[in-house]
Length: 96
Image (cartoon, rainbow, N blue to C red; front, side, top):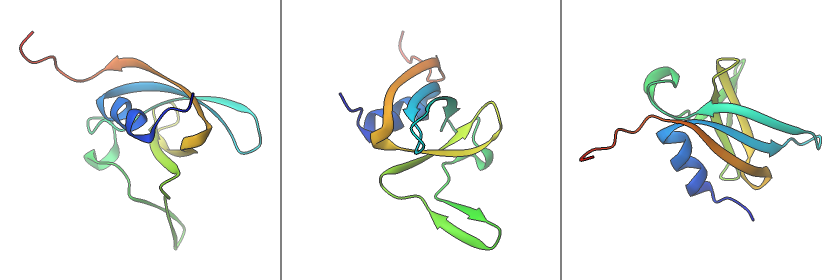
């Protein structure tokens, strides 16, 4: 069962996650990452990534996330995601 981009984004924006996906070379990777503004540099999601003077825009099929272990941006293809585990929710439960 494929996980939707909407579901992946919701989990990443609300907390710290382990995202399990298959890399382009076929190997399996688990990435501890987030899109929560308290952890992402500048407090918002990255719209583009720069490589020297070139700029590469992330497509609708690729998601850029903040790697919490290496402290830089990583990306993966949405359709390669096998599982998303929320390790820590950073959303306050209002009214509970």
